[in-house]
Length: 124
Image 1 (tube, helix red, strand yellow):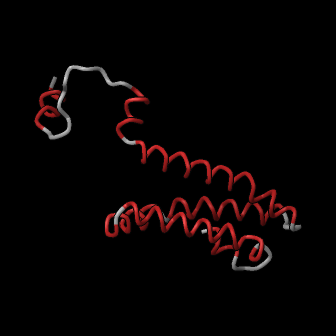
Image 2 (cartoon, rainbow, N blue to C red):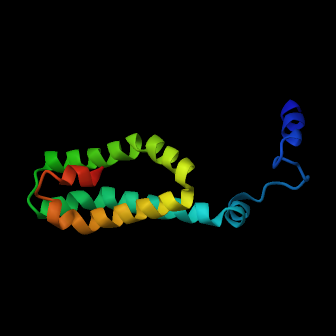
Image 3 (cartoon, helix red, strand yellow):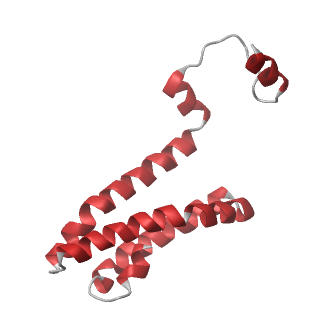
């Protein structure tokens, strides 16, 4: 009851009496956000799955492959706040484009860098 009284006074939280329409309603409300999340999740999961396979084909040791996957995870964790701050400063669309370009560049450079120490910067 208190939550309803507070939320009805906030802009964007008006209760029109209609039940939430679930995922389809949210998809209609924020399609770009859902597409960005879908693409990001697909890239992340395929990277986690395929970097060890790719590295193994170059003869990298299992410990190095595990470390590469850990570096990917660490980069995902540690870069959340700096990328979020940059998105607030320069806009979300600009940051999505920059992140997409950086991801594409790293993917293109992967065969050239896989056997060099520069691969660690590429994984971040």
